[in-house]
Image 1 (spheres, rainbow, N blue to C red):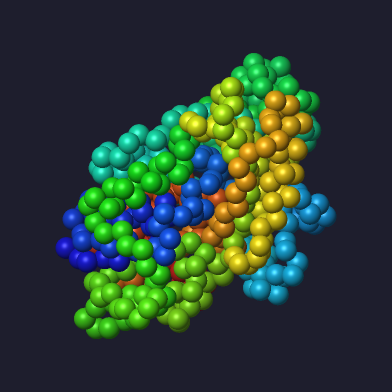
Image 2: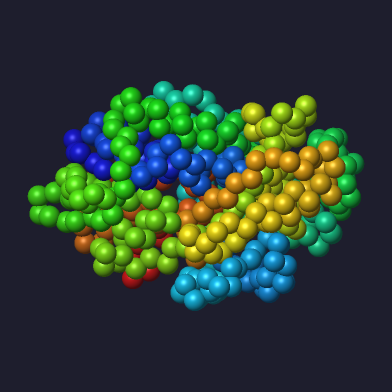
Length: 410
């Protein structure tokens, strides 16, 4: 068995580390702030199995100008960061062509077919707590046109994956979620949706298992150096950690490790904002999405989280928490009982412009693997990514994983 370094202790890197430990490898998980709050700790807690539509698509491309007119809407760009974001945006435009968008949908569908089973298998294999619950999901729509568009997308999901849905009038939707009192045209209910009870609790559980069975080390990896007999992970401070193989799963910061390996990757951040409310004497019975506004309200085991939307900006740009406040204000149109005060948070989703993650080996060195760019789907795809990375390191390239290969950007 091999000595393998995994860079990045978010949900992707931690799941990979545990999969490799279960396969019998010696694993060192590296992160410069393992006790911090990475993107995977603050997401909407959804195992979003039906979400197979790439953000880069003809329909979304048509809507972008309208979204950008609202600085607090579902999509915004920090315009001062536009020069740095331009390469990403150009690839996004190309990926929005019908054929490219359909290829992205096919790729995501292939991952979703086993994503839930992979979560369950990894949980059972490593002896983790059961954080998964079948919650269902309901999206609220402001107009008949929005309902028709949402139903058309869910029909594609039903054909591709078998997940059923039903259309509800406002009265039926309120019977399912009595807290929804504001006006809307109708809803779409997906009973097959799953979620986790709290994504941070799940991450900490996984990190605890890594500490017990492998090594979780607080250290910043700044470079990967290839030698014939080993891979050196160069750490801040000058130390070189020699391993047999390495996995780069450091979110958006993966790009800083990839580019010196003479590889290109258009990796930027889709920043998301949320507010988490605790101490409520009520909660929603299921996650609710606000389809025309790009965010969701998720009932966690210890509170209610309202968040989502997309802000394109450089990772180091300061947060704009007015976006979190805007989502709270919009949510209260539908759920008047929602309080104003809560804990605000901003996370940096590592985003590739075609919405398809990189799950790949280095094209010229099979000792180096990449797992990043999952965008909104990091939690959902963490376990299937872990299984596929372990397979790649053990068996080498696979034709079925070509859509996720880093070579598509070279």
